[in-house]
Amino acid sequence: LAGDDGALRPTVFAEMTAIAAETGAVNLGQGFPDFDGPPEILEAARQAIADGVNQYGPGRGNPILIDAVRDQRRRHYGLEHARDEVLITVGATEAISAALLAYCDTGDEVIAFEPYYDEYAAVAALAGAKLVPVALQVGDFQPDPADLERAITPRTKAIVLNSPHNPTGAVFTPERLRAIAEIANRHGILVISDEVYEHLTFGPRHVPIAALGLDPDLSIAISSGGKTFSVTGWKVGWAVSTPRRISEITAVKQYMSFVGSVPLQPAIALGLGLSDAFFDTLRAQFTAKRDRLVEGLEATGMRVFTPESGYFALADVAPLGHASATELAYALPREAGVAAVPVSPFARPGRDDLRSIMRFAFCKRDETIAEASKRLQEFA
Ligand code: PMP
Ligand code: GLN
Image (cartoon, rainbow, N blue to C red; front, side):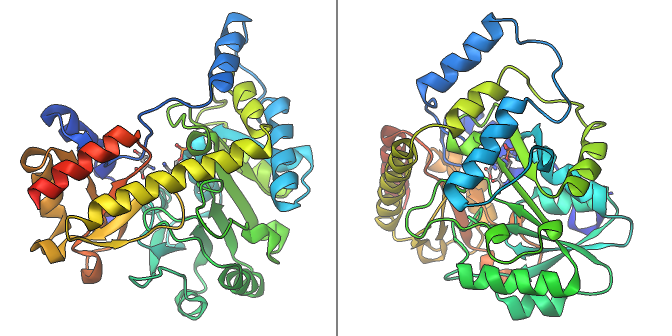
């Protein structure tokens, strides 16, 4: 199943977190905050458990959360959805898996912009399908619609889109997204749009491709509460599409998990309903963290690609004399006391332009970022 790309090895994130724990390194590898989310959300989960909301709930999710997802899509993007257009899942991960497994068979092709989040290739492999990468150029990491169109074949079943993008932090421009929507419409190809970093933008805001002309029946929008509310361990996500698609994805999802954690769902609903001030503050806090890490990395001599969104900054370690970010990533926890991940697991072998690029997480307390920066500067 792993195929020639080794897609089903242990994930680089889990591996680096284990090495960080073993060596006591500051962990800027796996993307999870080292602080808690808003206290009212944590309290809502405690309360639900205390109130006995502890048994199986409806397979499609708690109607309160389904309505909260609908409200947030209306409030932030002007998109209207009926209740049967939303499915609550076990994180965005399950929504992506269920969608890919629902629509891909042996020999099919799935296009993703590269570097790409590792799950896409792994689940394509589980479905017997092949991931076809379309390169994002090092620099602005914006997708090229002409390259996308050239990658389409009669076997192409889906394009997995991820903006705001992990690992580059690019926010794809509305012009590019509109062009991608036009191509998908013309070829009748599904767009599975992974938008988990939708609220963590530092400049231009996120605009979903669903709001940019994509045929609604080709649109599967996916997000989750983990990043927005700093509760990555809760794994409450969702998929939004047409009623027909949601039924088809639910048919797969019910045999993956049947239903996700029930008491956490009303808490995420409460979060989605927080005021605009919450979302503004979140963006401001993460912008400051981004700036702090970028400054710390630049002081080491690395070439940093300042991200416009998300949890991560990419940096080229070649100016420090390291040709392979993978080799450095294995040495760094012991030699510098910092863990980070190389970008190569997000790409096929052969992307030599990504070889010396590393990803550093800044979804961390200011002290953590400062300590990691200090250690990296001493190491460099
Ligand atoms: N998509 C992307 C781009 C991610 O970075 C992540 C993980 N952090 C996920 C999906 C998975 O999200 P969840 O934890 O909600 O399953
Ligand atoms: N999305 C997180 C990251 O990119 C990790 C999630 C995972 O461990 N699979 O770091």
